[in-house]
Image 1 (cartoon, rainbow, N blue to C red):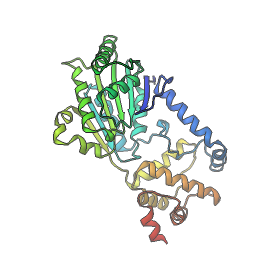
Image 2: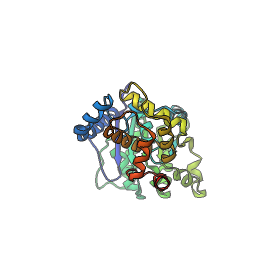
Image 3: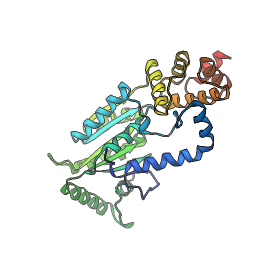
Image 4: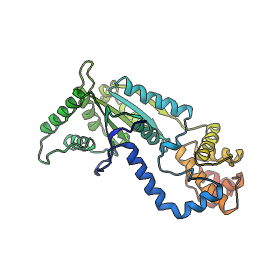
Length: 323
């Protein structure tokens, strides 16, 4: 596995520098989070015989569970990049695992791909957009440059990378925040491509409303350039149980110590959304630790809901039923 070259995650309005590949950035972010939690995690991990926390909320490709839906989404991402689709779009609910899937893909790219990663994009100013795109690609730009000058610099950069046998991919995470004007500007950027020469590819990753946005009649030209897309649905009950077992195994567990009826209730409460499953399972581990578990039983999960410790989608309804 060769790390992607020059991958940067760029929040709109914040520049991150000094990290040249996705794997390094991910490792540093995960390490900082773990260091902040180390005093409690040692007790937590030792009690359950684990090497690390299995249900962290930090996106971590090493814990990626390849459900049928995530395999399909990843295949579509690969297809879009390999066929040099102008625009690839992946959507899913909050916490569906989109970012984790994306980080895994970035780790698998070779050094013939230059990636600029931008998240929480919301500006409709085209000069600001092109400036952030260039910064995400580690390209310096004059503060006084006009849009025409910035666009030419961006175009020259793409042509130069193409001449070197490299292609450029711009990834927009949380792309549902892009407004119509910004999407139209992105479409215009893909006009740089001509015939068989693909200099630039776009990957949009966002929540379900992104699909509704791009289906708007006044964005028909944009939607026609989406050559690959997939929506990641929530997990079903059986998949939730397998997901929990997988994460425990990756964290060093020798057995599956969440009982089946506990897994079923976790599914019902979370609706099968991975991030919510992680939250509730993590609480179950804390409660289980305090009660001397494993196993993690149905009563443990019910107690969490009764205490109001979990604020997930279906928690309030089920808590009212329990109480």
